Length: 254
Image (tube, rainbow, N blue to C red; front, side, top):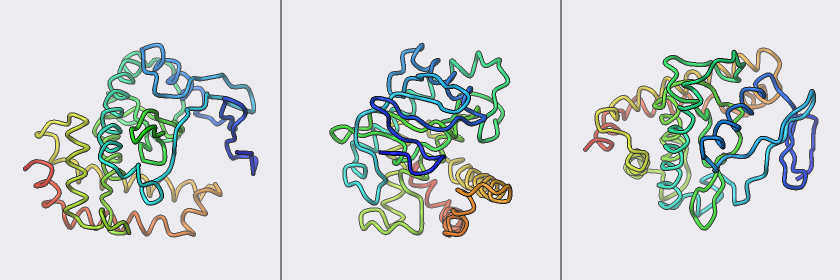
């Protein structure tokens, strides 16, 4: 992949190179800590300067649910949830000792249990032989609660959406079944599961507020997202999750 604009990441040999941002120091400190604590499923920091940051390239397939059959498989679903749990367990060690006043792209949330990935979705993992083996793109990482990060992951991996066009995932029953598989593989307790629909809604509302704020600041990526109707999809999904919250909880806990 070659750089197409001044802001797009590109591959340079065994490295991924992207422009430095205000949150780069925090992200690289996180990546260093993850590997120091034995988590090998994230890129390795290769440093940064005034203009560019560099991380190692993770081999494997990437893609979203609608364009990658293996990403829709149960093996991918279970391994993604298990990997997120391992990531949370490891990042909690970094969060516990977090002293530097790092800037994060998304607002830090209290209590700080882990460093949330912030966007643990199919398009931000790598797949090998149908199994999720790595996590990429930590730009949205920020301190927060496990359940905050997990809720968004469940939303993306189930996916709990009214707009999904895949036959095997378009019904609520199929989505809730996948949500339960994800929660089981993560190890989420039954007692915590009833809160998931409400937290997903809260997470999506926070995402909408962030997109609108960034678009108002003139950030082209988010202005384009709003023009393309991404906000409409999130609002429809919020309504969908609220409407079927009782059924979702029943499927997660029954």
